[in-house]
Length: 404
Image 1 (cartoon, rainbow, N blue to C red):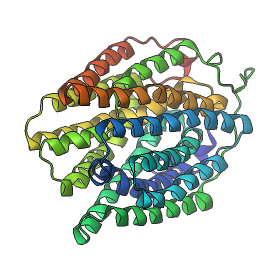
Image 2 (cartoon, rainbow, N blue to C red):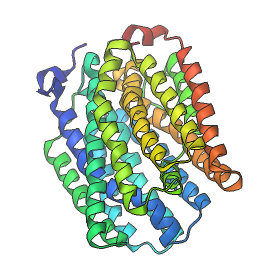
Image 3 (cartoon, rainbow, N blue to C red):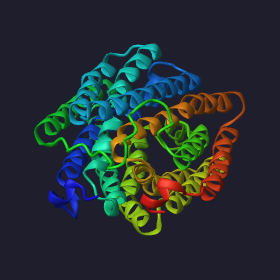
Image 4 (cartoon, rainbow, N blue to C red):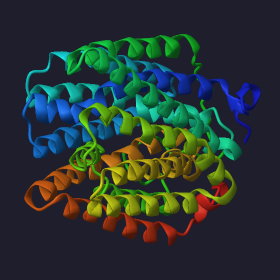
């Protein structure tokens, strides 16, 4: 089956929608990453919240997004429409960004993060399905890698802007939060004006109707979801890595910088990771990335020097480059085109099932025992998940359509 994306090649063999959605993510991440690296310090120092509260906020926020990703993906399949739902999601997030500047307590931050993640939940699955709809299978890894790279460019610019503002107005976190709304609304404008709805593809065989059940998906995809859940249980919020970096001696003024280093490596490795999966197969590249993750978490469990925090954050970026886009491309490989929105919703929901307990467990282990125990737990689960994914057999319909 030839995608209509072959008629709209734009940049490096990628379709117009892929390129434009990359820029939308760039501006959205400039906005969000002006806020997120500062949030742990703002929450724990300025507002006096605990590490357990931080874990609860991040767990609830990400799990909320994951539940809504399930619904929005299904809805985009049912309505045979992606763009309007994506626009709604980005708009909701843009409207909530300025509220962080008004927060006076951890509870208020919880509600604001909840609203922001509602927007993320609404947009993500339809957007991923739209990227897959706009990409041929032989460049699918590259397309998702490009999107992640653009996302990370925004995540580099965001902390730089935050650092520039804080260098001029020391400690004025709320000013940074106010300014973060500008690129968010610019991204929404680009999305409305430039992204096109793609023709909805229905397979020649009798189509399975979109539903919240897994009955329409084959065994390979269902097993993949179970392994993803296991890995996610050890994949807590990155806010804990920022707190660990601070404990290792990274000054508050350099927290945005170390976050920027992470995203530079993510940006550099995202497209090569996706292209590598187009050549070698998704599964091998994901396993490689998960093993890097285990190494990073083991490193944070045992680190004692400031330079080690910088090195581990850089290595952590390679993990993202090898997995973020590739995991999504793998989903598109394993399911029928008319179920992609639902499949991405189920995929993100599976991550959400592990996200809340992951961050809560991390906060409890950190507070009750030590950071070493908390990071060691994450490393162990990553190793187990890597072994299980490596042994996953791709059969049935998945074997006929998958780059493996």
